[in-house]
Amino acid sequence: MVAEFLAFLNPATGTDNVLSFLLSLIWIAFLMIFFLYPSFGQRMQLSYMLRDLEKKLNRLKAIKDEIHRVTVDTIKRVGRPEKDPTPEIDRLSEFFIIQPESMDPYGLVYKLEHILETGERTYENEVAKIAPHATEHQVKSLTNLVEVLRGINTLYRVVRHYYLLGRKTSNIYMVLQIQMVLPMIIEIAESYQQAATAFSKGQPIGDGVGPLVAAKLADGREKERYEIAKDTIVQEVEIENRKVYVVRAAGPGGTVGRPGEAVKQLIERLPENPKLIVTIDAALKLEGEETGKIAEGVGVAIGGPGVDKYKIEELARSRGIPLHAFVIFQSITEAITPMRESIAKSADVVIEKVRQLILEKVNGGETVVVAGIGNTIGVGV
Image (cartoon, rainbow, N blue to C red):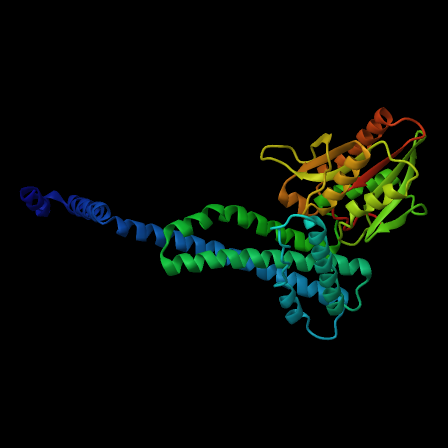
């Protein structure tokens, strides 16, 4: 080794060989340190992961700040408040809802319903205060916009928490967990950013395909509509001597209404049980599946906390009413961003499928309930 080293130092051998030999020595030394002292390699890996996490955290903060700006500007433009609404918006972005105690499950659904309705009512009232000149429908859309801000704020706080905690404790496993899920979190955050634009402009979103189907099925029969539950309307349609009651949230404000309570109230008022309950909603697609793809099955197609779903299921079980469902597949991004053309076109296909189902399953003179589930922002009036 010494002889080789001296040979490399000979000017006749050239500087390239000397440099190559020195780099080899440095590389061998690095490998020895890496294997003899594993903590050194782990610290280097942790340092790299923290830098990568910090970049993504900054990206997340930029998205949060952009949504915050859109929210403030929209409330100023629509609500025309007398003073700067920023402090109140910041306060609402920290708003939280505590889940009811589930140790004793009896009555849990109705306790959850009470808490959710209280939270929604409180939130809408607070938004109405900071946007005094906004109409009722605009207040609902602004409420959705502030909720988007609340969602991105929560995401940012959670990621920042694990980043700071991982850096403080030098816990590589904690940092690794948040780094693995961070790409999905960034994707959701970018979806929120697009959703904020949709809610600020009152544009229909992908999740509104259920109400869109219901509105088209009702075919603009505004005179026959009436409110049966909070923010939820019923319209009566006749399809070849079959009476169809169409339930959906009342647009064009951003709300999902109370479809479970609406269906429950409607059926209790009817002189006889309907022969069929049909629900239509958006559903999350799997990777590789086509947006706007339609699937049908049995059960109640309603997402969310489960209160509305429980009410329809319990009522149908006690009265022996069959449950049928149609879903339109889309990604989480497509569900909360402006409605894609493929999703809008699928509404017409679902209408024909619903008509065909009614003609096959329901006899002339009998009734059926069809509920379009989803956020009805920008859909109908």
